[in-house]
Length: 355
Image (cartoon, rainbow, N blue to C red; front, side):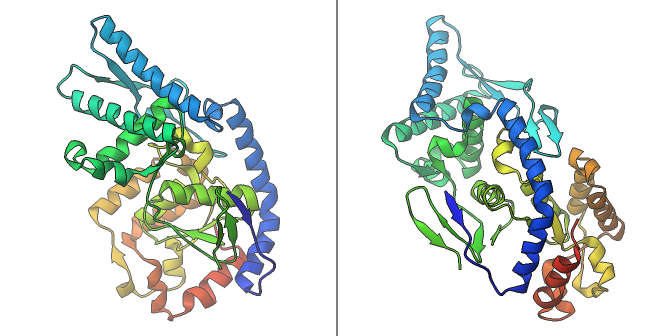
């Protein structure tokens, strides 16, 4: 996908963004150089450009191991990475959460009643992938699920197995010809050209809906790599909003094996900051008490490795924990209906009100 930004705009907010782009470009390039160095020496570099024959070969190797086990009268076993284990993760500020080379694994045994169903489902989806790569066709994870709902049981089962296969083969999911339904939206002074030549005019920012999906994260990363623009996040001042921002910036444990392609370490937290709630004197009736689940999530995030290198983020989390209150972006309308667009964002961008 190639990107192009139209000419100058009269929007004051984008003028301010351009000024900040210049001031931040040096630090962004420094982070990018470090990330490139790591990517060139890291274990995932060999999957950046992968051919169809290599994908087919990787799947054939898995099947060959199964056939070999059967020929030796042994029950076949699949070895998967423990993608949810924080012990398999290391944190680097320039990359985010990435999988270590000496990760722990788990065995999916074909002769174990507990794991045999998953063993069979992995082979089923490997077969689907193999045929799609052979025929150069694509399917969404939802398509795969609805091809046999009784077999898979739920969409989440398909999602997890697809990610397990991607990690096992060390091949990005998008190279396996499996797509996902995008939840993100994009609008602004931006146009881009897709691989098939389709031109999209978005008449620049990508806006997610909830937990970031892979496509939205890839697009934000592409914008950062190609346009060298600062990336700001505007989230609800609640634990869920903070976690979403952290996924964009540092990635997630379950997708750490693709960190080099998904994370944007230069992201800045523009708002809504917990400290803004008191500073702006937002009315109490516009705030929401933290639930027990919110408090547990917040406490868990405060222990994550990337918080240690973000003292200002840590301070904001402490403010939220102490107040036991959260606020949605819409809480700013309690000040005035257009406070967000006319006052909050312009002043934040003009005076550097991000962390």
